[in-house]
Image 1: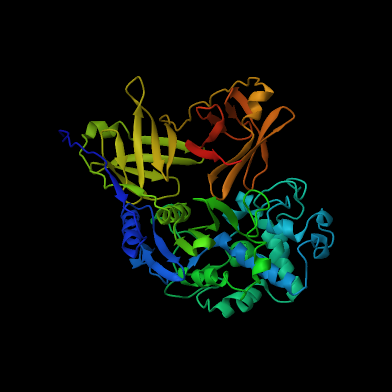
Image 2: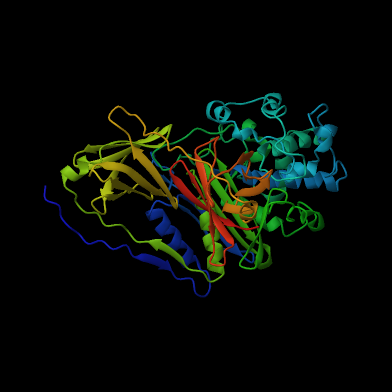
Length: 545
């Protein structure tokens, strides 16, 4: 077949935001993102007590062709934590407990409980192991009910990641303990306390906890990555006080408005939740300076769902983004919309143009590619079209934009095939969610190419000191670099420390996992950001401290 050449130039669509942020401008942005498969969910944007936009986009259930609306119900994961912290503050105000109470007061015999305070549980500074880091448990058992004692046993006897109060590490386990403390202090279930003390007073009639057994026409189906893979539901007994709430954007907006009053928590006490303790974190809230203004925000991620709430108290701006697709879209969109309020523009790529590529060229790309040891992409040629099937997912057609560059129409992702010096396809590059992931083409027998042998070099201490600091990959995921006993240590949010070994003066590798870090300096010679290389991905982290 003769190849038809079509010149295709990708223009950027610029969302004009000069002047007031209007319903039409927001709707235009979100319709474009939906059309380009970068968003599927519901958004609410308000300022000064007036809702500017409250609307659903994409599918609530793709198979049934049901669309998202303003009333769609989503799991919100870790946004639950701010409700848990509010209940704790209510109990403190009622003098039923204090923030400095020791964990041992409520859990006799808890290892190290005499050195851990309630406030440290709230601020992720307790050092307690994060139970959701247990991949086997989350994969095999998270969809099934679990008893409180069994949940506690997942982390109670794990060694502390650090001495309580000395460092910060995101720990869902701390909020599980807070939920149990609430039950011990009140004599009621955590779920009942939140319902009686927050949901009912605020009229949050569409909010609850047991998403698994919820029978409601507005209930969204959760998906992994795109709308072809529906996933199971994490049981509320597993996520509990760390992430069990389901709700709507409208109910969350009622929560936002209440935070300006004394209805749930007295303002003087509530400000403790909005105070930075370590790593930009308060009590269930991230406190971040944005465009010179204080914002309080937090995201949530739970199987098949993601969420974000961003508040600018000084301007009474509230941005709520909920999605039933596992992605970082809520965080990105929330921050883009906040930028719009501050005069920033949002650029989006225009629709891609498809060309025809001859069959012989397409055949060169057929094969199996390894993104990670347990995650492969198989490329096949069917009826003149390349099909890409990732591990555990359905097939997706690839449409050519160039001879070696293809795009998907079901999700915002592109695949580029790279040819070696011998003219054969060597690897592919997957572009998705702002990331660039490389996958080596495997041999006919499925064998992987040998991993590179990295050689360690010595780097002087003064050079190493330049890299010390905190780097933000996304608002709720940071990497902290320290220097201990002559070696750099890297600690990501919710994870233990790992030693970095120098391959070059600014390029380091880990020995416990196949990952590398590169430190990049600005023209003045100061470290500006790092790049994390892992699983074929390149992720930048801006130095913030």
